[in-house]
Length: 397
Image (cartoon, rainbow, N blue to C red; front, side, top):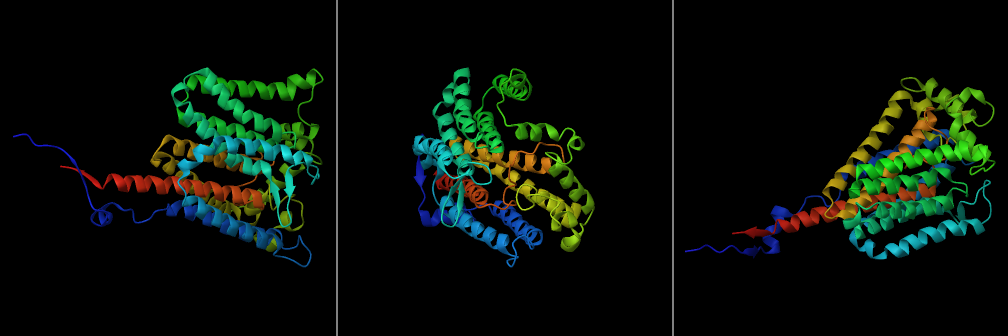
């Protein structure tokens, strides 16, 4: 007598206690984000208490509002199946291009065409472009997954990232342009592009940098503005021009060095309180942490970023499909690049490119975009746990 094998559907009320996850969100990812927000608010409170006369909590209150709105966005996105976003890849990519082009018709703010002014908020379109690029580029890569071994496919995906990058660089926003390129590279890495092609891309990037910084100027063609070239090259020898483009780097190094082990405290942090350290609420907020709270404070902040990056890697591995893996890979590239470049420029090992420190730097667009990324990561995690639970409801007998 033969024994038949069939799938038996277990009633939901019987299977749920065994297979349903206890938590349909990643608590450690949430912990990392919450810790960074707390560090940001505490740091901003001490660094900007004398910046706006009569309103010592101006930056803290506005940052808290941005965080509140960001948390709401993250909750909404976490409850949506991220896979549906793939259907709107052309819409997202078109919006990415449109937003970055529109800013050239907007008023100049602080010498740049980067912001779209709204009644209560200035939208930095290039920041939101990071997430638009991730969800659209990941979808394009999934659509051509069987042809990823072809050089043509790799070139197309990189060109899709280079187009918006070349639009934002003249705004000028060199840092975001580099983030776009990094996102595309990381998506190609996790899509399984061959190492030969990835190596060729790195060689091409190095060659492009050499041409922009040396070759083109020698021929009388200046791709970057003079101050951008000085920022990119000044970190190699910061004492060469201490009163101009390398001033920020020197003041940042002094601030971090003076913090020593436990910091000088808010009252004695003279580099910050006397405004020797420029942009202490945005680009150089990590230097404020180093001066005020010392090595201990800096280590706590970096540990929280390590937690955030580790959980992103974990979610990437758990994803139920390739689209989720590539979205998480793009977010991973965005976070790692921004943390490495921002922290690196404050300690003098990276050039100044204006890249914000996620969830630490003051700024609505940056905070909202980071929480959008966290919401998508939670969506990937939740959908993976749901898929895992559904598999447990089918038994083979």
